[in-house]
Image (cartoon, rainbow, N blue to C red; front, side):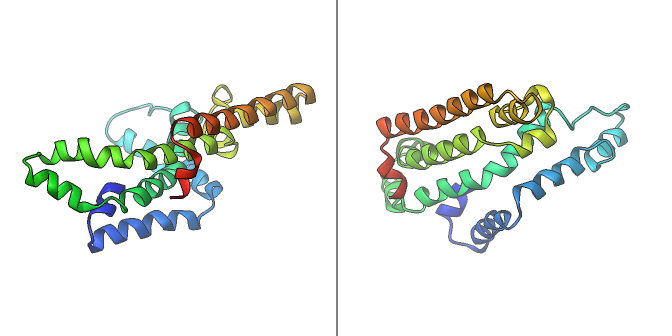
Length: 196
């Protein structure tokens, strides 16, 4: 989607960008509740499974599948926009020059466009991973207790078990993981490339 929007200048590419941006108008809590309705036992997806002969229909809500779907839906716009920002600045004459020298579209993409897109891929991955490290609401509403992420575990330790020391230790681990990701990113790609 980011590739199409960055390399085409037509109404569809602009519409895709607007639709991607419109997702940010809704809170991620609202988007998570939409998935609760869609994947619930009386939701349209389960009804579709029943209509094609799955009886009983598979349980979708409160599974790792539901949690992964919700997280992907919430993080996808961040990844798309990170990729788009980098891909839009790649000079299209490079691909045309490769085609003029006999490169196939796939070879041109693999050897020219993709390597130049790597900073956007890395930025999007870093952004999504750091956001997901601290996700609390989506895994709690869509996933099972065994699928809790570290923020959910910290909440349980703090609010239910009242084990403040363990919660503090887990919070420090979360902070160290986040800083370690930033250090690794800076070491290999350079933090200053994020804002170029």
